[in-house]
Image 1 (spheres, helix red, strand yellow):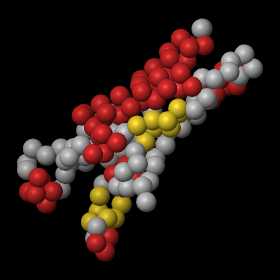
Image 2 (image 1 turned 30 degrees about the horizontal axis):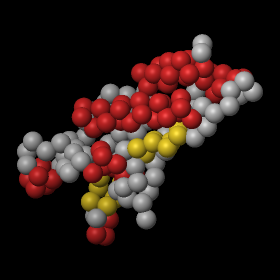
Image 3 (image 1 turned 90 degrees about the vertical axis):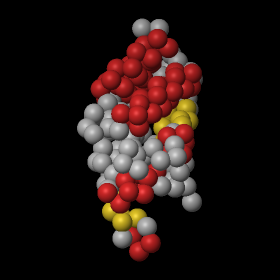
Image 4 (image 1 turned 30 degrees about the vertical axis):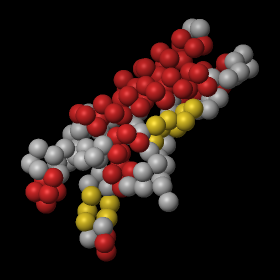
Length: 147
C-alpha cells in the first residue's frame, strides 16, 4: 500500500491571521493550490541540490550503490520516480505535499529495508518547509488576501 507524506505548515502567526480572516474569506483553495505548487518546486530543487530543507547535504550513496549505478550516481535520482511523484492536494484552508510512492517514507526518514531488513538507508529529507518557503507562503497569502 502506498504511503503518503504530508507537510503541515503550522506557523502560529500565519494560522492566527488565517483564523482572524476566516469570517471574511470563503475558500482559500486557489491560494493553497499556489502554495502547493511553490512547495513542489522547492522540493524538486532539493532533489537537484541533494540537500534537506535546511540546506544540509544528503548522505552520499553507499559504495555498493555507486558500484551498481555508477560513480556519478546521485541520491534519490536513479529513475526519477520519486521526484516525479511529488505532488500536492489543496483544500479550502490547507495543502498537503507528498508522494504516493511506497518507498517515499523510508527515503525521507531512513531506516532498515530490503529482504530481512538488512540494508540501512540513511534519511534524506526532501519534504519540509524552510524559511524561504515560509516567506513565499506568506507572500502568496498576502496577494490572495489583498494585504
